[in-house]
Length: 496
Image (cartoon, rainbow, N blue to C red):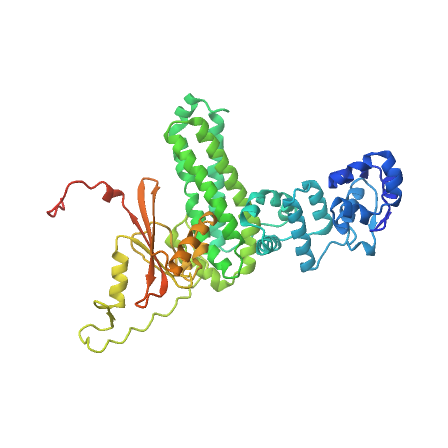
């Protein structure tokens, strides 16, 4: 049977009666077809195009899923040329058309349409979908106004639609030592730790028994500590890989994945707190949430993020990712040696010429209250007992100190848009501070937080030149844990 926009509903249902129930799944507006009188009257005159309009469907997509459903039941159908849909054996190949269909499927999913119907549409229209296509589709949806939080909310459901196609593809293979090779090596290590944790929780029973919890407490505590190292894996993604992707205007991963990273961190923190309180039920519940989210993230990394990144970044960009990795560290594993055989290093800057009038200080720079060389300035900033970051007037990170590190930083952050250096849920606060500093309504902002056992004091200062013009923002973070404990006074040197 040939299907097109002019095919009558009555003709369609007489030849394929099983489509009656299937049509109702496409739209609640089709429930009236259950009424025999309506089928005999309206069905004789209503076309697929008219039915699609009533049900809020795209006629081309509707013909495609009907064709697939008929073939699924052993029948045969063909979509004719005026249906604007390729036949079942001619899946879309044009990249722009594929992107349009992919975005339409996801928009319909977010609009509440049935998952199985959308899966059928996907199978009918798209074959051989690859990770870069999916990554590009989600990026375009965000560019068109779909919020990152909405993408995150249904991220797992998106994967459910594409999973079969993605699993037809092999995981990417990279030479030992390549950043992606190290990321995937960490993923395999984390899978073993998660399996061990799940097995141990199984031994404690469901719900977990208090006595069993006490018996296995030492081993469980060790595993929770090991799971916590996932923070380093995510920090490297956030500070090394994401900046490179953002340089290609590919911000989707940093906005969506970072938010999920924070969810996982929160689950692990809740597990640690419940474990410390001797609460087996909440320990187990939080660990299950963390493990489920970590496994889902591994799938997204292996099948979407990493292949898309390899497709997008150049060899030189991967070298930059590699160069900053050790500054953040690695989770569970040591990177293999091998790639790249040679790291391209920037030539050292020529030493500055001595300033006139300062013959005794070679290379000195005249400051408001003295003179120092670049080396001395760098050493001074490095030895300050605070964590400094300077953001220029264009909202780009221009500098961070190498002294007392509180929050992870790496060379890849230099030049990065400051809003991309914070979790999505904090961006509105960053915007508020920057807007107030630029307008002149505020000059400082301060926060203090409890970070594990440390009490951290974070301050932001508007930096202005002598004319009062805004030139940037200075972030100063300091560990006040020991300072808060000081009492009385110490007026003599005590090094004992």
